[in-house]
Length: 401
Image (cartoon, rainbow, N blue to C red; front, side, top):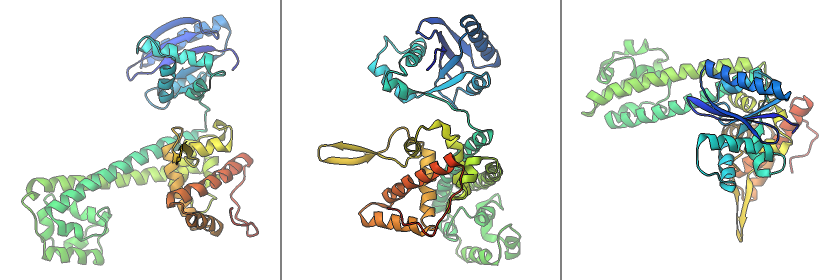
């Protein structure tokens, strides 16, 4: 790396410790800033003073990129400084190899500055500090939206499991009236009254007025009403069930709104447009992949992209024991999206299905066979993004080997 004014930031939730050093590692200044506009202004004032004095470009390394570092990380990029993300786990390993006298914020800041000095000579330091390559605004938005969507889906499943457990205890016959408690007609039926016991006395004409409840589901409800029984817990657990059902309906609407927003943004993302041409790749997974990948410039080779996407497990071998190990560099969101899309892809492309079946015949598990095919798909995705090409399914190609 060419000589830079080096800035290390130990990020906290309310304040950050900053260290500024020369290219040879000499500490120029250390200070604390608050996580406020005034603190950010003070940070840039001091950095600019040193930059003007030394006539050097600025490189900033900080923990918590896209976490507690926001919005300082974005302000650093907007200022034109080079931004490096410090991997917390690898920084901890670095501090184990090169221990400090104690564990304090100033010591951690100096260790971050040491990474700059050793980055080009020591592999451990190079792995602990990586430059953040800006991606398009559309991909940045897709990352934010897709991450929020995933959190909402997880919350929905948690609330749904809780509601089903309560229903099983209060009125198992009501839960049995549907094959899926996540059905909107079922949730709207439950939330149509403030008392769960009133549902057993609703007239058919009233039931039919509930949104999404037609003749088919009304018959399921009538069948349940004939044998409706409630446990003694219904008096205080019933309101909890109704609250949970309302929250699930709210989450449905929020997730749908995010899906609509991501679909609109996907049209503005080059990565999303390319991925959408691959058979079996769904809109949600495409948005997640485009947002998390950001830009192909982040990766040196397609192997590093495969590692990031979780399609390249590492061998963990000792003596007669040999198994696959998931590397820490894997983006778990990307891995989940890839596993889903590749599983759907094999149902759309005969050559991919033949490759999957061949791996299963070799004794591979379903997930192992999906990852093996996913490794081939990463090569395809890399070539598509590198050469600005859409996915092509040719009839004259041989099955994957």
